[in-house]
Length: 116
Image 1 (cartoon, helix red, strand yellow):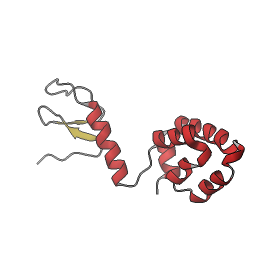
Image 2 (spheres, helix red, strand yellow; image 1 turned 45 degrees about the vertical axis):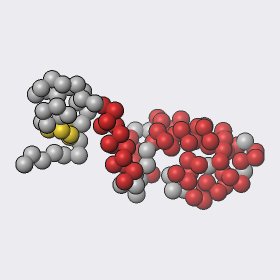
Image 3 (cartoon, one colour; image 1 turned 60 degrees about the vertical axis):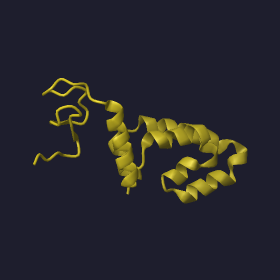
């Protein structure tokens, strides 16, 4: 039985173990369905309780004034403060900057800071 690591997947055509990032299987040459791999990774992150930095950034940029990104990241106290002061517009401005900061963070730095 062939074992695979977390950074590997099976080719959709021949079943060979390949790197998860591979676009084309080196054995059979068939292009892999990248979208399916991304969806699988996101579902795995959700099932493990991991946070996604793109989702956090979108929450921060689009509705940061309500602190939704803080609730998403498990910072409930900060989220309540954002709601209390949302009428001032200051949390919206801070949320914009936080969203940009999330996008500029490396994946490892984001996971280290926000994943339990």
